[in-house]
Image (cartoon, rainbow, N blue to C red; front, side, top):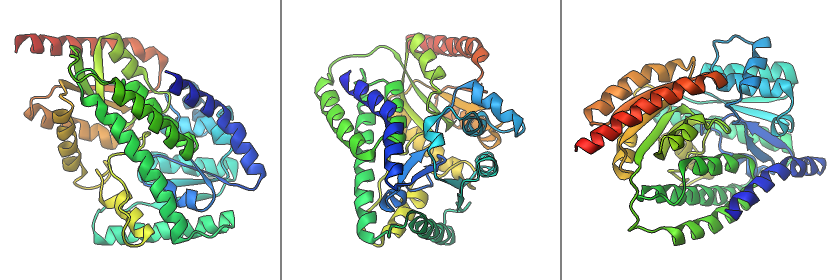
Length: 386
């Protein structure tokens, strides 16, 4: 598809473009994923937001062991290793790092970035309670981030510039959601691996370019949808804590086995596109509501699991899912605990769950494929017996 070629070309040229913009005085603000750092505030300050979400490559994971312990999840180690190796162009262009204080793995990755690079790091506090007090704390921290960026960039952030940025990113999320929903068809108009690649591209691409390209793509996809076409492949949902840019192993194996992953739900590594910022009240308050109060909570928050169960149960129904792959990374303790209760809850709903764990090791592909093959065979047998 020509549109994907345009996106690839844009991402290849983007580091050169960012260097040119930096020479003109623009700042590049890198941030760690988790959907708690509003790109809108960064964009309104005149800076360029870049989400640092690469993973799946064992080389930077191994390189990180020179400065940290192996008992940190491979995604956090990849963040460290890619900065140390210096071969990831986007990571090398960052002028300031913003990290949400959620899991300790990302927090330590930010500490090491600061220690070895000397970059300024803004730690965005994320409350563990989604209540009135927690919302006030988070809103105050967003105001602190706003003030920090204004000083750092030398550009004032007005309500008008914030609302303009909010409108842009609302449009971006809405387009991704429309494309995502096309996978509800029995013969999806786009594969999940392509959809996640689009999602990942939106973290690095110019947002105006991304809105234009997604607008063109949605027209093509909606015209190509044949609602009468029947798809016979198994329909899978993949979920877990994180799926990074480049970590496509499980999705590729599912395709090899003739199964379709038709939906995904992850906390880190992908853009959360299900909800937008309501354009009412003050812009910072509206951002706080969108990024904290009005979404599925992350796994480190008390009582987060029940909201996650309900949300995924809705996806299972809407996307007609036959089975779920729970994909997590080694040493992700919070989600490792949750995976047990998640599988139990889904069993009550009659949905089988396969848990896959990875350390970004190239040698685990064979064992993962063997387990997924057995899971797909079991689901096919259940299907044929119905």
